[in-house]
Length: 183
Image 1: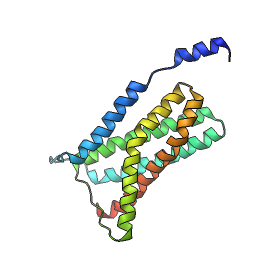
Image 2: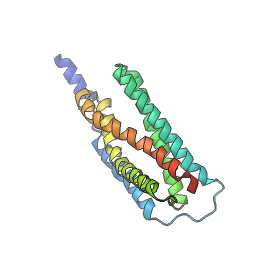
Image 3: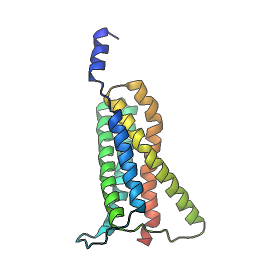
Image 4: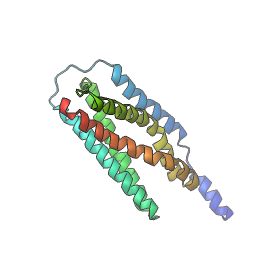
């Protein structure tokens, strides 16, 4: 590598760590608080029962965008890969907005099934929730390394982030499909 290239690379490297830490804490704290917080009891003009379906739709799009991003990077199409990653972040942000809105306005819906399906549902839900909390800093760190063109560091963490984020997005859809009859 030419010395001038190294200096230019260092000049464009940004420190995203404070933003990653703040977003991780805020997002996970807001979601945790929603679990314990009393629900809003005022009247709304909007039918909030559509929000869980929107959550599943946004998770579906995130999954598709992540698969497309993976497909593009396997073909060395960095520009398309980046576009699909930004699309996945967008649909994830939209998911988060609808998720927080719904859980601010409505009580959690209990799963009404029983037997083996109940245990399968609870396993999927538990792993989904735990990994969703973990994916926040992982995805943000992976994005930051990609934006800073830290290719090797980006690849190392992306090998963990991508399958976990794919799991979180698809299990979000599965959780919705399993609980939707009980809304």
